[in-house]
Image 1 (spheres, rainbow, N blue to C red):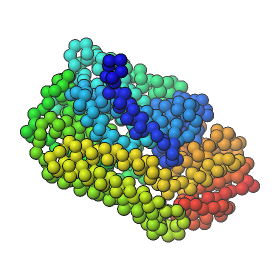
Image 2 (image 1 turned 180 degrees about the horizontal axis):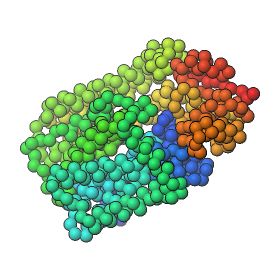
Image 3 (image 1 turned 60 degrees about the vertical axis):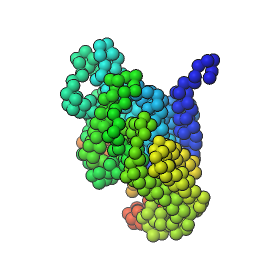
Image 4 (image 1 turned 45 degrees about the vertical axis):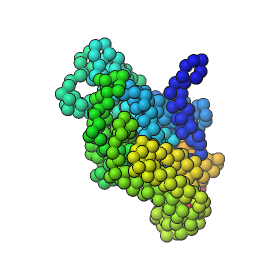
Length: 574
């Protein structure tokens, strides 16, 4: 008690989020592509001072709007251009998300439900992990959730309260679109349409709808409108074209099988993804709520989950975080099951407990034996072979064998929760599994991730950071990467050479155009680096499995080293 008043639960939740998401954010390098992509755009904003346009290689980057990049740029202006600053916006978003979940959960039923929702969310693998990353989706999803919940409140509201929720729905969906694009409106909008069809209830009255539209347009105009006024329709056109291509084709090799996102959510949201299918028939819907007309939020969550799965099953590009908005409905529905269990004593669902136990054994064993295998020379050689795609794998230090304890601890603690649940203490047992998951995610990030990152890109990043200290141009050859921009500390003057401008002018003359796209610009820069008249050395990074082809094709490049899965080349000026 403080001055006769109980400490607000929001302070406890903020403290929990701070402990879970803030420590050791900068302990490993940013991962290529997405983390480095967005951090590089923020770095270039700071260098150029142009906060109205997102760029990569100081060329227009029309794949994403700028809101998240602005947050990273603000963070970097305070803490410097580094990994911690790039990931800080998501860590703070994680704290805010837990508070928002508690708030909406309390509005839906009561504070107890809010706590259940927070427990499930932090005790589930992928939702927990994303707040320790530097990608757009956590901020984007929070805005979409807020927009959708206020749409649900709007559907239940009477009188002047409709205007309040319509305004917030317009504002938050506008912020979502400003964060990642049109899908920020698409998912909440489709959910609202599906709700109206199923419930046969048209709640979009003209005046509240007009207010929502005005707030949405004012919010999105902060970038879309201003950018169009500054540079004409071509930029917006390219942005729309890119998003359509993303839906229709496998972008940059990110393909996958039809039910890719079903599997991702089933495993990544374990055990919440199993709980959502269990609903005790003997339990009536709870009436313990301060807002009875919010009972239909349960329907909105099921619809949102279904729409996410349908939309991103249709979309040809398959990336794990595309379906990450589904973490909210899955955790909400799982929290609903836990809440019902604590209301009334129920018979143990043996099949559900057995299935959860099977999942615990699989995950714990994979963590334990995977870490143990990488502590042996043979196991490490096999992993490196799969990464480099060559038989000639470099010698790399094996993992310490104690990392296998992480999987063992999860297996012991989580399986003890399964045993407790089997003995009719469902709440205690399942809660222990969620807590075991949250602790295991922390241990993975603190102890295991520093060994994972060097296997995938560590050698390249170390090389780039060293070359950034030299007076050289840096490029990659034979694969896509953003690492050479960020860790190579590229500057605008690297693109100001008169010789490069001649190459670009020749390209324009050949194709009779006054404009070349960023992709064509990068191709011109690569041609200049490989064949043009350069005023300082160029160093290239290539994947080891492509090095023989590069040596045969570019005889004038000199190999200067190899490390990890990479080979490094150099070209001297004439």
